[in-house]
Image 1 (cartoon, rainbow, N blue to C red):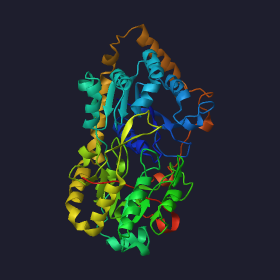
Image 2: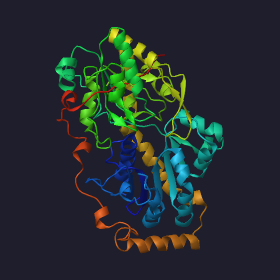
Image 3: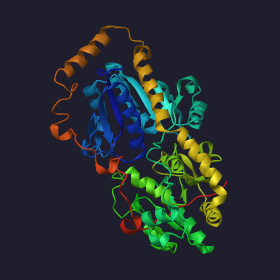
Image 4: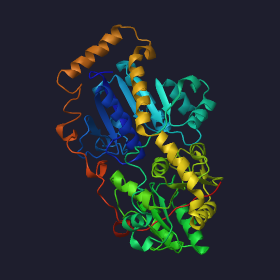
Length: 473
């Protein structure tokens, strides 16, 4: 690839503090550093805040008229025709890709771009989803388990489907061994919590994450005479889940758990340096998720050398075996948001048992922390980025092979359309599609500044209550 290569991206914007946003930022950042291609990004969950990334980012959530989706679905095809990319990269769920495939395929047949799609596999897949993967030029999933699930349904994917793991920035997420645990607890969570075991859950308050189970587990632990503290780094009221009301019903108060302040914008986020402090100040990380494609909070916690308590479900079991404390997740739940697929429901009773084990003897599990830390270091982004650079370069070099296109009338038409769009600077963008008001540039927001190591977070002053569940191995 080179500076004349055009890449269109459809994913959470790099300034958004979601898991998708973080991963897309690292992948596309590595591609830009390698060859400086021209990048146009249709940013999901993005509201147009200033940034200093060296590419054009267009807020999908501003392109809404009758389309109520934050995906920018009604404008995706138009975006592709305007950009006329050589490569179209997407980071999304398989069911989202399936729902947009006809539109994407229609544009691809005329424009001839190569598709590279990165997809989380967190549960069973439907045949129409995996068949769509066969039509993607370069389909990539997060884990070997995810590939196994897909190829079981569509065996032809065995040779085509690639696996690239997530990474973690170990220069940002790291153990703060030079600061005593008591000082960390005091500074991050408050002086009154120095002598209590602190459990942390960093996940959104969504149906899939089932944060209420953590509160159930906390209440059970307290009934058995223990006095831990739980911090849920999540909006307390989202998707009709009110963690305050749930905690109140369970007899829990602000002395037992905290959350982010009510109404905190979940996509605003905190600086990574503050998230690192949260991990380091806690005694253990817990999760009550019903499904996970990878789970960024696990590898970030591992990089900070923290004990992980996770539900025994795939792909977490494959990733974290002998690197943390698993607990039972043998229940079954159907979530309305998740295309009627069954997910595994963690046991809050089993989670409570593991929490008690940690309260009674935290040193017993140091070997898990060491093993998880080695795993995280092996997945530093410096080791993952070259895999993506190689994949993109190979896809670009072999682009004609994907579509068996000879240099024919269709090809020359494609070139003429592209060249005509480039004459006025931005390739094919009209003032109607993207006015100056819709283009963004400038400084990166403070919440996305990875270099700021001076900020200190005090949840005891700035946050309210909440809690989480899960169980054993």
